[in-house]
Image (cartoon, rainbow, N blue to C red):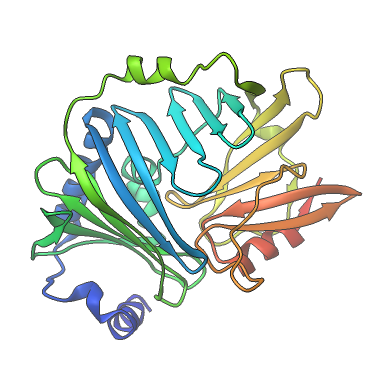
Length: 313
């Protein structure tokens, strides 16, 4: 089956393996380890473009040893800031700010590197032999390919000098390209994260705060079906600052991909193209005992729908 899967990818995306020789997993694992180390140590500024079925989006990125600020060029001029344990979203259009305090954030590559024995049950690691130019820099290609057609595959172009990811492609369950992020410029100038963090606390912004607290996984609601190799990772209770509107965030993983269930309607939306969810991120909305919940993740919509259909509060 694995061989058939690889043959299918060769046929569907010939660009993927052009001028490429598949190395052993030891070499790919070594590159993955360097990429993860770079996520902890690199500081840079970059401009990038997302290309999705729903359209293109230009973004500016500031990154410093885990601190990240992403500014969108869309009309809302949304800024998303990630710090230690917090996520802050600033909406310039209405001068408001959402602060998600203590939120567990997952970087899939970090998680995969830390749980390779588990992740390799569902995915295969490959590395390209040739070099590729992205944003004027030499890169090597790291591929994480799903063994089955119920989840996505990912291709990363990694800068040889800094191990920064210069481009990544997401392939759907059929091996077809559905999303691409590519750097158009990169500067390795040092960014001081403490200064960047200070700039986000603008007094005149209206603030809505959410507090996250970890719960025992023994308190998990009933779920009748999950994709193979997925299991419960953690549960968080979420409350607004006024302690109203409390709900839960339940997280499942296969060692790389994540499925999140929110036990309330939280306003998260997938991008729509001609009325369909065609991008990599999908949202399924369901009802259990009159309570609305959402199932979310970078997974095929049909998989999330099946998870939701077997979920009970």
